[in-house]
Length: 307
Image (cartoon, rainbow, N blue to C red; front, side, top):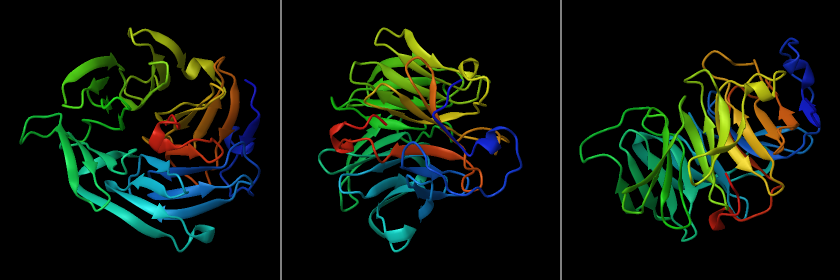
């Protein structure tokens, strides 16, 4: 395994978990820490800034202009970050009685929200009004806490939903009609539709085979990244994804379910599965669940960030 930057290396080699000095990293980024319930920014020199509280957060975006949209466990917020991690202001809030694992700012300025137990896909206006609702479950029925995790509104109006407990990723029409189903045993957590029509999926630990797979429109797995590809780094539960313009894939390795401190939080791999970067600051983080790189250009509201 070749690694461009591995930080801090001592942790991955089993050394004691001590507070490491900040050191340069491959990409500055923002991320969510599910266990600590925070959104953080990590600068190029490795400095970690806590930006906001975000209980059980699993998703976030960096919006044009620098605001951060993120999930709060039972809702969504948009934050104008302050200087030095303090003094930020919240400019958008949506609260739900359901668990919320996914959010997305749309090109029309509305915010997409996926409600897990209620099985609802929503568009919420800037003033907090629900302007569109798609129900994936019959009226009055709930899907339970494992019904879905990450979800995305697609440019063509369809929706891509990771049904964690069902072990499938489903694509729905704008009306909620099922269009396609992609098997992902073990629990799909996140799914990203790529420009060529393939679907990138992060799979959890339900079948003891945490992995990232890329599936073509015909349902064939055309690329995957598994524990066998990185025997020197422990994969625990794959959650967040970002496909870069150079073809590399950045993924978050959630270290919950008794795995805290036992592997890298973030891994970047090439198409040939060479590890370009691994990040493991266990002094600052416990379970990173979602990541957005700050040096990847593009407007997320136009589908230019594949996350």
